[in-house]
Length: 309
Ligand code: FAQ
Image (cartoon, rainbow, N blue to C red):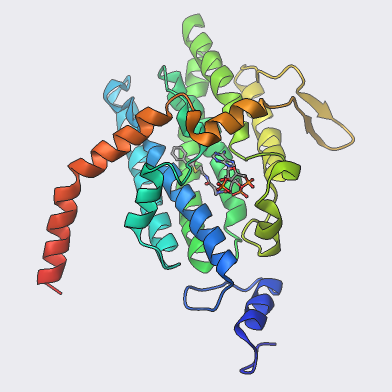
């Protein structure tokens, strides 16, 4: 039971223990605040940087229908970035500070957005696998302990589920097309499979942030648990459209009621996380250029806000 004599720490512990949300004006440990600033801003950066690989195909979409859908999807990702920056700002750091950290390389964004999108089938693979992986993670984060983050996740998940389906539709369509189209779909799956399952981060034993994150109920499930859920969901979807997951060790394990799967290339993963991913320089340069090009809009908006209170 909450009572007026409780210290900030006691009230915080009570809320965490009882699955109550921590809100921006509540007392919270400094490390909890910093952990969330890091994770939420990196999540926001991922949404914004994640617009680039798909933005690459808007002008080359194969039909008006495909173009309208892709355009809407990329705009949704911008919206997700906005909710997440706004939610992260409630922790006392400004959006400008977060963006500076991204552009200087101090803050990360998801490793998955380091890979180029080489064909139209990649739009299918990104929607199906990348949004599919993001949903598994974000459904779990709907129950995160920080109120503004949790509420942002509820809205984001609704949109991600449309994104996942539009990607799967592209893959299904190509997989039942000509031999060449099917080969393009398989090639996209081959290139995006391993990076998608790396989105969940290192194995639990190699994940320095998981301990505190689980204790504070920021994360509700671990990296490995979420990765397994994603794989178990996705294998059947690939089979249904006649595509093959590029993992020779993938095998149903009757005892566990889950798929066993092969090992990821962790040296490659850490190299990408350190900023040496194949498209990192290009992604950050594009972000800096777009940010500079948009500075007049921010100036005008600020001037308007000042003038009109
Ligand atoms: N990429 O101890 P852990 C999307 C870093 S949204 C880069 O396990 P943690 C939507 C990690 O930051 C995708 N870095 O860390 C969309 C930490 O470094 P730090 C983004 C990674 O935080 C679709 C270090 O390694 N989703 O795709 C990665 O407990 C299509 C140690 O790792 C989120 O951000 C990685 N994959 O777990 C948009 C979800 N993995 O910060 C456009 C929220 C680990 O100490 C188009 N975030 N690292 O220097 C999370 O759930 C967690 O932060 C994890 C990492 C799971 C990403």
